[in-house]
Length: 313
Length: 327
Image: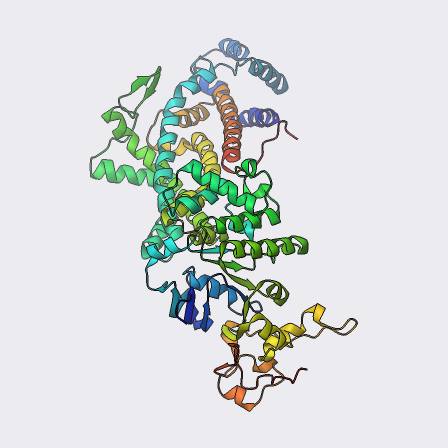
């Protein structure tokens, strides 16, 4: 709660520093009178502190303001875009886990193999190439040269429980591939490195040697003894990345014109749509807090040494 | 010695480093009968732990067992292959490690870690395996094992964890248990209890025991025979009374002199000068000669061979301590 309050204050002041939205919103040919009417209607004539308190009061009741540009509640606009971003992030992390964890295990357990060196080198590339450049290169390769995939948009969507999703139609999947790949590559690399270092450390532990001395099969040692210990940091990082990707898939969404929250944020900043920007940051902050809570819960379930207390200390 | 439970011949384990291969275990040989307790004694770095791990093929790179035979019940464990060896490990030869906290997986329950030791070797249904685990925990003196079985290692005290490790080793009624300093990390009272329990358990089940330790005092209470290791070699081996009462190797004598209880009250504790040589810096000839008061020119020239005494005691020394010439 304290986090949310602090963030709201910082963001609210920051958007004021960016510029005056009135210049952008109002028809240049409007009269002075029309202009003042507009400013008053939006509440922009009042001092900053008063605007902030009004915002805070409304926010308590779940009202984060109305978009200057769209004329709809800001929160609603953002939430409408949310499924698209979630879909992107979910599949990106799914791929990162399904590819990264097994590869990382292989590398960690066979650190001298030449394949391991190749994977580790690849993961450095995957992690260090900037997202926007990689996105454009993907478009160049897969769309412009090979004409395999469309460059932008979500494609055909299907509603599940009233939420539009892309991954159930062929057209949607074709649209999904590149942005998901763009987000998945650095995260796969991250998973590889995390799992590899964890496995390399775990396999020299005494409990692995003791398990071998008990005559436990190597597959079981990897599955139960090693993987179980590695999963703790992996889950933590996955949680953090989940939040981070939702918040910062902005670049990928912009490059691929994916109609998610990130693209909305960029557009809103250009248009100085203060309520949307503030609501976006508030929502993301809330998500981060929520994800951290979930990660802590999973953490406690995985690591018996972590005990959740009944009350916070 | 045919019919021996374990017959180790010329076992050699080296560690490969950039500069070359260094022998940590340099050709050790010994035999054991069923039910016998052998104390394997030496300072840190003498190769005693590596020797224990080498027996059941648990040496990881850069280490490698390069020579020798480990004949266990007539089969050479070095050549039977990894999957056959896996069936021997934990079932016929069990091992206990020094640090029981590190040896138990922190994120798995005690029951899972003990049950797997049974079910990896035999097709035992889970409830039956749990019953055996509970019985084994009770056997090593853990109270209310029915509830403690589902706890995690960190919920046990140090002594209790070591009992869990011992119970795990006992599960499949092995013919041989290799115990690598299992009581070193425990305080003295617990150490005494566990020693006594191990002795009883080994006697009851007829399990042979290799007890690896740096503590001759522990060995004297427990072992039938003792092997003293120095710089990768067994420098003296024999019956416990022979070796402790009539040591032939100056190093054994030195170890005995360093036991506080053996010294007269008020006298300065005797010690062996210098430190054990590192893997890379073994002197030519006898590895002990630089710390040895009896060393002569011959010791620098060539390494002493094994000399066998009348009662099965044997030693590697050019100038053994003559009988009757006690310092």
